[in-house]
Length: 263
Image (cartoon, rainbow, N blue to C red; front, top):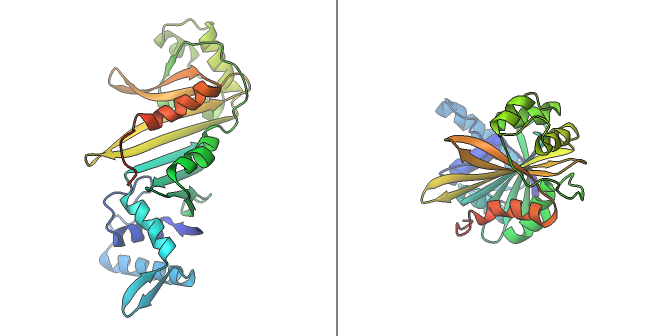
């Protein structure tokens, strides 16, 4: 199944299905009056009806079966994965026992293309992993040392293809400016192909938790940057990675949530 829904469409459908939480999509109806909500629902109903996704039968809503099954997965999932490439290509994956629903954000950020994928295992192998490996070239690692990077700094590095605070970064990590690991990281940022981010949200005992990882692809060196807590602050732990090590770093995000059912 493939269709396009707006943020408002999705949130209204989640309201009908009594979803407790909608990870990754902001509620656009804050401070709306009841009358305004009625108008929004009327507009969405007409739109979905024209798409043959809903009808009114004997005074009750009747949804197309595969469509409402997909919406139920979004409403009841306990595992959501977000992928983001270069702050532009963003997808949300809502995991069910037998299927995964992908919401791919379109350019204007108001609409999502909805795809229904096969099993969670198939989706990881054929959709999510290829997204995370975008731009990766077959380069061996040269350093085993790690670097702690502040997330906001990393965002700026990737935006400008430059490390603006090289001395501070080196000093904080106990390296000199010309140390190999710092210079390799600087060179990789300068020659960045893509930066891919994976965020995994999972519900444990009614509490949502987050695991995350960035993958930096470059013709110099490839890096993984794992979300960690250090001195009660959020940091990214950067290290060179390639091949099986790179795949394992990505799948470690999944392993750390092992045992948490997808629905």
